[in-house]
Amino acid sequence: MFKGINISEGIGIGPAHWQAQLIEVDDAQHQEQGEAALVLVRSLFSEVEKDIEQLIESKRGTIANDILGVFEAHCLMLKDPMFADRIEAKIKVGITIQQAISETENELMTLFSSLDDPYLRERANDIKDICKRLLTKLSKGSSAKGQARMDTDYILLARELTPSDVLEIDVQHVKGILTVTGGPTAHVAIVARSLGVPAISGIEETFLGAIQEGELLIIDALLGQVHLQPSPELVQEYEHKVDVLAQKHAELERFRQEMAITRNGKRVEVAINIGNYIDALEVKKLGTDGIGLFRTELFYTNREDWPTEEEQYQIYRSVLAEAGENPVIVRTLDIGGDKGLSFLKIKPEQNPFLGLRAIRFCLSRPEIFRTQLRALLRASTFGQLKIMFPMISGIEELRQGKQLLAEVREELVREGIEIAPKIQIGIMVEIPSAAIQADLLAKEVDFFSIGTNDLVQYTLAVDRLNDQVSYLYDYFHPAVLRLIQSVVKAAHREGKWIGMCGEMAGDPLAIPLLIAMGIDELSMSSKRVLNAKRVIKTFDIESFHDWQKVLEAGTPAQVREILASLT
Ligand code: PEP
Ligand code: MG
Image (cartoon, rainbow, N blue to C red):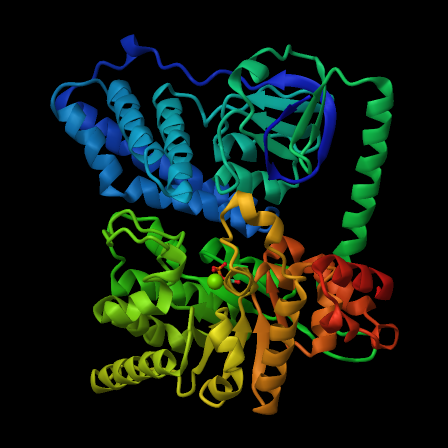
C-alpha cells in the first residue's frame, strides 16, 4: 500500500491503464518562419479558442458548470498577452512554432511552479493543457487526443493529467485516477470531483512508475491509500464499501432541492463558503440559501499586483448575479496571518496571527480598502450583497470600517453611480474580545457570522497551523461552546441574525447543537451541504432538550459523548 493526497473523494477498483503519451509534432513539417509563422500561430490560437468554445457549448447542460468554468478560463488565458506575446516574440527571432510553444510552456510552467501560492502553482497545469491543444492543432490532429478507449473498467494512471484529459475520460469505465502531480486546488481535481471520479495525486513517481499495465489496484480516495495487487478478501471488503458509498450518495441526492427545516418546523439557512466565481455556481445546484462567506483574499493572492477596482467589480458582480435572490456575504480582505501576498512586503512579524491581519491591515492601508469597498458598492445592484468585516476585536475597529464605507458610498453617489439602497453590514465574530462584547457590537451591526476556525485558535491559544499542538485545537471545547452560546444570545437579544462560517458549521455532530443554540444559518464548503441538510431535516428538538449539559462539561471528549448520546 502507498499513500497520496485525495483530490476527489471516493473508492475505485480495477486494473491499471496508462495514459497515452503526449502529442509529438513532426518538426520537419512546420518550418514556417517570420510573417508566415505569425499568421499560422495566430490562426492556431483562434482555432483552439473556437474548439474550446464549441466544447463548452456541446457540454453545457450535461456537465457541471464548474467544469465548463475551467475551460472558460482557458479561453481567457489564450487571450492573455503574457502568453501569446511570448510565443510571438520567439517566432520573431526565428524559432519554429512548435519550439516557441514548447519553450513558452516551459517558461510559464517554471514561473507558476515556483510561486508560493498553491492555487497559482496549480495553474501551471492549465498552461500545459492549452499548449497541448496548440501543438495538437499544429500537428493537424482534430483535437487534443485522449487515451485509447477501453471496453472494461480501469484505473487511469498518468504522471500528470490536464483538465482536457480528464474531461475526455470515459466516465463509464474510469473508476479512478492516480497521478504524480496536481493538488486539491488543481483544475484536474475540480474536473474529477465534478465527474464523481475518485482521484489521488502526489503519488511518488517511483511507485507509480512500477505499476504494470493491467495490474489490479484499489484506490481509496477517502484515506488517500492505493493498494497494489490486493488480496481477494480486501477486494471484497472494498466492493462492499463502494456499495455503501453509492447508497449514501443516492440517499443524499434527494436533499438537493429541499429546504432545510427541522422536524419541529425550525428553518435553518444552509449556505456555502466560496473563494471564487466557479465556487458560486454551486449555490443553485445544491439548493442552498446563498453564500455565507466569500473569502475575497483568494482573488488577491492569485496575482502579481493589487487587483484594480474594475477587476474586483467584475468578479463581485458575477458572483452576485449568479446567486440571484440569495444573499451573498462578502468578507472584506483578510490577509496577513497565514495568508500572505507575494507582491506585498510587510515587515516580518513574530506572531503573524496576532499581527497586522484582516481589518487591521485594511484600516492601515485605506487606499486598498477603499478600492475594494468601491468595487463592492458598485456591484451591489446586481444581487443581495451583505458586507462583512473580518477580525473585529472591538467597537472602534467596527466604527472605523463603517465610517470608511459611508465615505465611499457618498463618493460614489457624488459620481452618480447607482448603489443598492440598503446593504447589511456585519462582522465575523472570531476573536474572543468580540464574542465577549457581542452585546455591544450587536447594537451596531446588522448581522454576525461566527468564525470558529479563528475563534478556536484565539480562545484556546492554539496556532491553527501548528501540528505539534493540533491535539488541543477543538471546537467542542466547552469554553468555545460557552462563547458561541453567549454570542448567539447576544445577537438575538438585539433582534440580529447570526450565522456561522467556520468549519464547525458543516460538522454533522455539531449541527444539532448549533440548531439547539439558535443559530440562524450554517455556511460550509459545498461538499458538506447535502449531508448538513439531511442532519437538519432529521433533527428533533424533543430528543435534544438536555443539550445544555455540554456547557457544563469539562472536556471536549465529554462534549462528544453527550452529543453522541443525544443524536
Ligand atoms: C474562520 O476563522 O472561522 C473563518 C471562516 O475564516 P478563515 O478560515 O478564512 O480565517
Ligand atoms: Mg477567520
